[in-house]
Length: 179
Image (cartoon, rainbow, N blue to C red):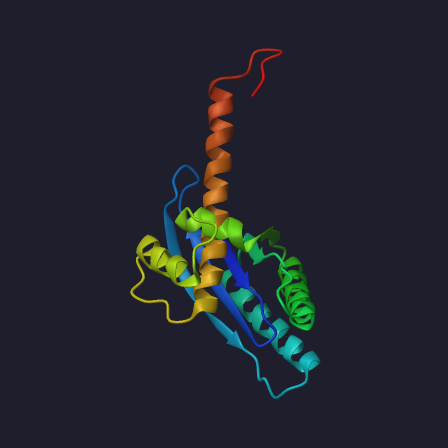
């Protein structure tokens, strides 16, 4: 069993979602928790990052994840926002590493495609699929939904990787054969 924490970093709101992968040979997931860390927007940026770090420490201590899945940085219309996002990602990566969890990064389009089958899916489409997939009534915050998507996508990646390993062991390639 593997516990995976998904983090959708932000300088004002950071989403988190925690799932347990019950078995590596199937994509059976259990939701352990999810929500948002909402920093006080009236505080200076440095204090918000401190607050983010302290909140993530509590979450990491509570759930003890084996892996943390974090959204890769993207450059939108505003470079300043991207830089602030980078700082929030750095805090999340640092705290995850301090908690001795492996850190994985995924691009948004890759996660959307892994969850819905469409890389261009809307956040709302991802949210609906996750609610059904995880048996949740309603995920009220998009940031939490994005974080759960990151955690679930990493879990699916682990299942696919193990499935591929089993398949290759069952049918070893002949010398000189191409994949």
